[in-house]
Image (cartoon, rainbow, N blue to C red; front, side, top):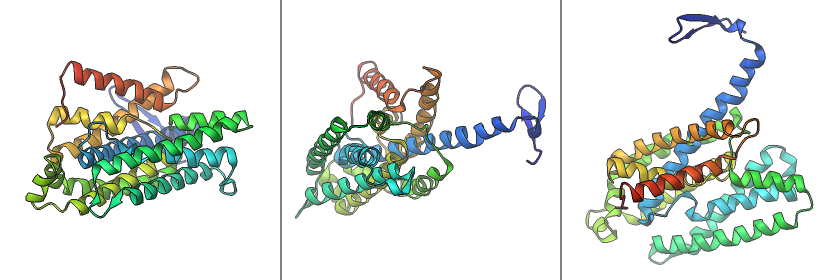
Length: 310
């Protein structure tokens, strides 16, 4: 390995990489580094999706999983782990199963929610809830009747969400999607602001609602599907972070989109650190901590800051 010089800031010392044990270098490079970067990408992706869904539906409870994505992913992953549908492709079977479940649920929701007037927020939410319940029922039945206890535990842990299995190969799909989706959301800042004022106001201002809504569904579906496929179902990030940022900088999406994306990435990184440290040597699923911290943050915003969705 090449000898590079690392400066220890504040200590005024220098350490040669050759002096660091190879096992330590492997831990940092193959375990810690991809996990941190994956957490950053997942947090940013889910938050960006949450911003889009809340603008689309004008609903304060909207989040990336409003399209039934969470339940569809769980169904696909459980089929891969317990039934062994995607077994021939090895470790990728769970991610591919989750992604296939997500795409299936999105296509089903989009098809059922579409009408002659296009896709309206209320139809999207109602169909999403119905499809989500259907997928959840099928997932629970498969888990309940599974004969293998180890597979049941694995499926349960996956559904709670986590970054423990992060690999460098998990990063490119999400990293490639984040940049164009972020740019698209930033470019749609004015239409999103107009949509928050109501459909009639948006149409008066010249916004093509059908086009913007289709783009939002596409962005949300791609980001959430890719995030869920590599990290499991991590809730509350796409719900709470957009509200928190909106309460600080206001409803203007030109400021809100970049700041929310950054805050989501930082939030996920530190929640994952807490998940590794709070119950050592075991690890708490990240989804448990995001739900706990997200609920407390939401209650604080409503009670103390008297936040209202605008």
